[in-house]
Image 1 (spheres, one colour):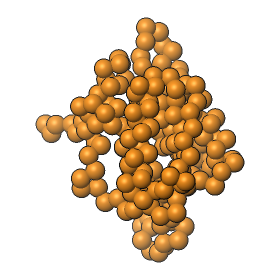
Image 2 (cartoon, one colour; image 1 turned 90 degrees about the vertical axis):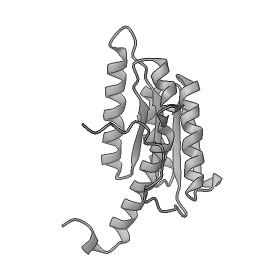
Image 3 (cartoon, helix red, strand yellow; image 1 turned 30 degrees about the vertical axis):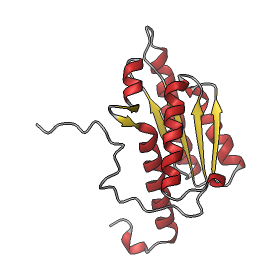
Amino acid sequence: MPEKKKNLSNSHGLALQPLANCHLAVITSEWNQDVTYSMRDACIDELKKYGCKDDEIIAISVPGAFELPSAAKMMLANKKLDAVICIGCVIKGETKHDEYISNAVATGIMNLSIVSGKPVVFGVLTPNDMQQAIDRSGGKYGNKGIEAAHTAIKMIHLAKEIKHGDKKQIGF
């Protein structure tokens, strides 16, 4: 049986084209900020690595993961953006609170992306404990903030290709 790929942050082999004149928002939950700020910083560094300039990235914080979808909606309504990246960390606790929050956030982000027609990236960790969160925010499994940046880059290029590209290349 093949081994699962656990560190997807390594961009070797990814065909990521540089970004030019793109505007993004990176919205980060303050809850579990040792984890989320590490993801945010890695995400922004990766966006810059692929051509985003400081003035093309708006970085804001919200109190918790639950507020990510509403902040993303506000940003999309008030700023000209090509994508929004939502970064958070909901750690499992002794109750089902984490399940309610995680499901609400995932559903809100997905629905906003569909309704807005803009990529809204789910960069929210849902680990069982703090060690798993650390392992995925710069530890042994990479940094999911980098993966969120890669997702945004790919989706921005896809949107531009669909809008401006050769229609024969898209679909069947």
